[in-house]
Length: 70
Image 1 (cartoon, helix red, strand yellow):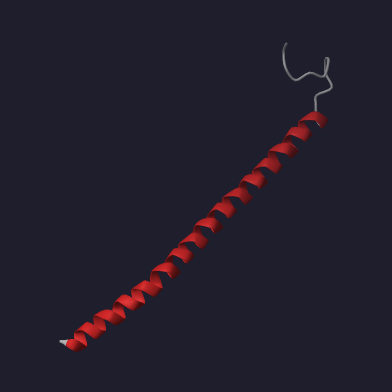
Image 2 (tube, rainbow, N blue to C red; image 1 turned 45 degrees about the vertical axis):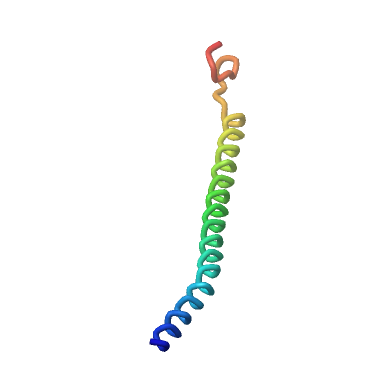
């Protein structure tokens, strides 16, 4: 019975050392995911800015050059 107690103690020690490692890996995964999302948002913002600037350059020449009715 003493041998089973030693096995249980070893399992607990492994769990105690594995939990912080798993938490760190989970944190890295979350931060990488957030970083990837922010990177995608930056690319979307750059694309919108480029389309907005092209809208200023590529205006139709008819009338007063305004794209709205008012």
